[in-house]
Image 1 (spheres, each protein chain N blue to C red):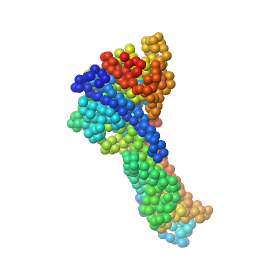
Image 2: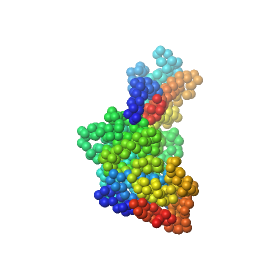
Image 3: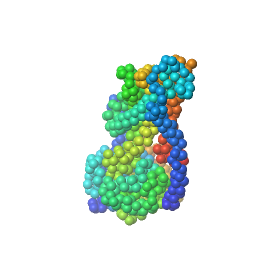
Image 4: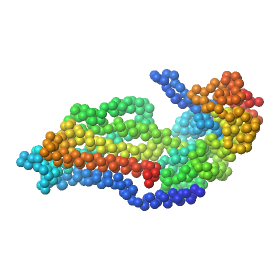
Length: 292
Length: 334
């Protein structure tokens, strides 16, 4: 009977639920811990770094790692440990801001496109055009038009990332508009805004949150590339990208100049991707049930 | 009306000439639009406490017709009257309060419940929207609804994915009951369920009708189920009703060759025996034609063993016979 099988379901669900959430989703936990450390590094940089990251010291150029300079010094005698910590600030700010802005703008434009055919036709052609240009080239072109600053780097990357979010959001909205449960809600007397805020948006959020983690990772890499080729944050601000660019020429004598910022970037991006994959499994109730 | 005209007070829903076309393809530069006539001029009415079944093959327009009756999609032509009031051209805002009278249970119980909402939220939605009960009484209302469909009260805080198909369909039925409607459209409500669960859900629907006098528009392709649950049956073919009549009359003495063929296809010993002796050779051959380019005259003539030259020229009208049994066939009309 129905009631009996309800009880069976109950037993199964509760057995699984007894395991704490952080153990059921180890990738999310690991990703969050690493990202937490990176953010802590970025925030606590002034206290963790005893030496000014921009202080030049011609007498102490290209020192190997030592108790005084944990990550060694670069060719202008600046402390690589301090610069790596401050570089985390640029990466974290870029990643978070770009993810938030691109997802927010993309969702708004995607909703408009999903609900109005005329807007849809015009907007999607513009987005197709933007997507035809590789994101990195678009960002370089935008940076060439403006002054090098963190704000401009963020704007350039957002412009390059938005079309992908718009595509995703529009697709989700179009699918959800036709969903049977939206039809059912219409029959239940729910109006346009009820459908939007109660049925369409909550179901669109999970895939967009997952997408936003990938955007954060890709934004950090794009920022590093822009800084590496000298089109990113000004060289007076330490960032992992411009540190690697400066260390590139002396890589054979002082590999630590490239190694440490490169390692930090890779680990951070890996952590974000782990978080994204884990969230995707966690936020889809149907998928989550199948995976148990 | 085609049936022995029901008194207006009893008629819940009355549709006439109802049609729906979809634009399927637009050639280059937007010329030469092609349209698909999913529902092509349908008339019927449903009385209080009555079950009218719609049967037909896939692609005959049953589900489209069901959604048209609720104005979940807008009709291209025709009239829909709810208690004698025309609703076919009402804008969505004006339609909303009237939806209280017209509810629907959907075919796929896995798709018809929002995965983010709890059972309590799903059932509370129509109660709130139609102001059935004050905010303080909603929880009690939801519990009463769950009891009516045979679910324990403690499921209110659970989400749809925690239930089996049969339980979800019970939740879907409870949602349809929430505003105390006059007509419930059941769009193949059991076809996605296991056979053992089908009987439970059908019995529940029968009990609910006996208690509250709901009218059902029951869409199905399962003739055994239709025979069990219906008062009247309408047979659809390519967007049109080809035969409509009381259930026993239609099953025991079908008049349209398409109805005969459908009944002959049922793997029921009694029916097959009859088909074998009296109606040999009426089994359906070929596929249902495309509704984008339907045959001229009678839509069924391309597969009909009785088709004459007249069937290609003239579209047969649904002609009422005795006892409300109507058929649209040149050959079989009296």
